[in-house]
Each structure stands twice: as structure tokens, then as C-alpha cells.
Length: 123
Image (cartoon, rainbow, N blue to C red; front, side, top):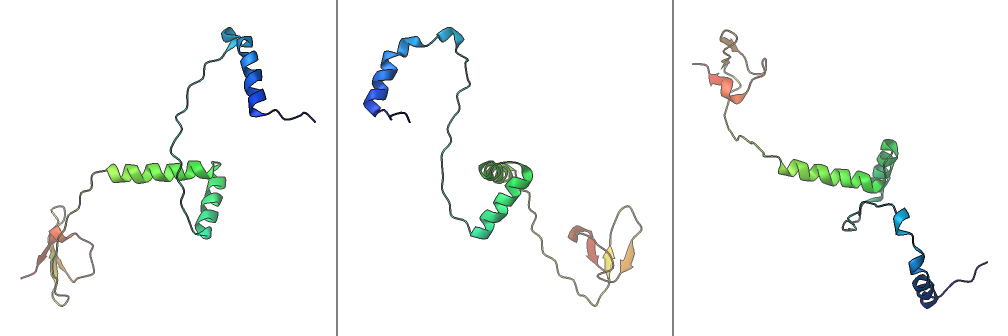
């Protein structure tokens, strides 16, 4: 078994052979940006489910978590359009459904799906 070199011996060996490199035969590589490492605690059941999903997709657990993080950020950057409205309907009285594509009809509550802007109380 080869004897392990000390840090000083390895440095001296590298220095002694630094001119042995053939720069012409070198292959350029694209540098990688090292990301920030984070740590988090998850319930064991969550970890098992994530690992199973990663295996199912053929990716690493890290890749799966990166995908999840990217999805959260993408969703957060989407503009949200929310409309708030409130209306009261008396269940005992019929409502009139107003739809420009069909004739106006009077139907009891619960028989038709409609949005709040289509509903007017029957007189």
C-alpha cells in the first residue's frame, strides 16, 4: 500500500511538476457556479415520499427540491387577480339566471351553476 503524503510533501511535488502540464492539450470547461447550501428539517414521512418521487422521476432528491423551489418562485411572481364579492340569496325564493346566450328563466336555487354577476333576485 502506498504511503500517504503529508500536505507539505504534496505541495512540494505539485510545485516540482507544475511545468509538466501541456497547456495545448487542455480542454476548456464551463465554470460552474456553486449554489448556496441550505439545511432544513422535514418529517421522516415527507423525506421518504420525496425520495420515492425522486427515484420515480429518475432525478436526485436535490434536483427535485430545486424544481419545487423554482415552482414556488414562479408562482409567486405571477400576478394574482382576485375579485371579492358578497351576495345574499333567500333559499326559499326563486332566482333569475341572466345569461345572454340563453333565454331568461326562473329556476329554484341549486338547479343551475352560475356566477354571482349573473344572479338577480326574482321580483
